[in-house]
Image 1 (cartoon, helix red, strand yellow):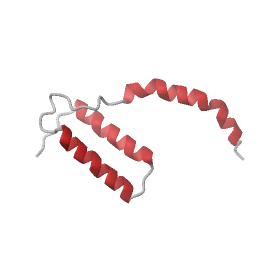
Image 2 (tube, helix red, strand yellow):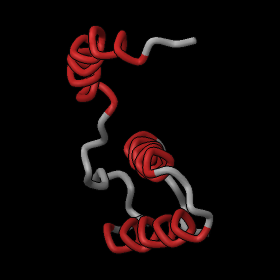
Image 3 (tube, one colour):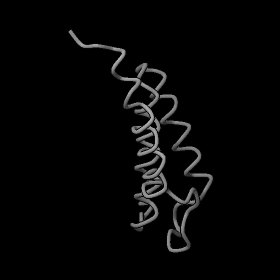
Length: 83
C-alpha cells in the first residue's frame, strides 16, 4: 500500500522544479509578425472552440491547458496558411 504522507516530503521539490522550468515551455501569448494569415481574433475563436469541446467531453483541466499551449507554441514557429 502507498503511504500518502510521503508525498508531502517531495511536494516542495516538485513545485520548485515545475516553477523553474515553466518559463522554458511557455508561449509568448501573441502571434508573431510572420504569421500574417492567422489573427489574434482567429486564435481567440480557436481557443473558445477548444473550451467548448473540453466541456462537452468533460476532460481534465490539464488537457485544455496543454492543448492551448501546444497550439500557441506551434503558431510561434510555423507559418500557417488559411487555405
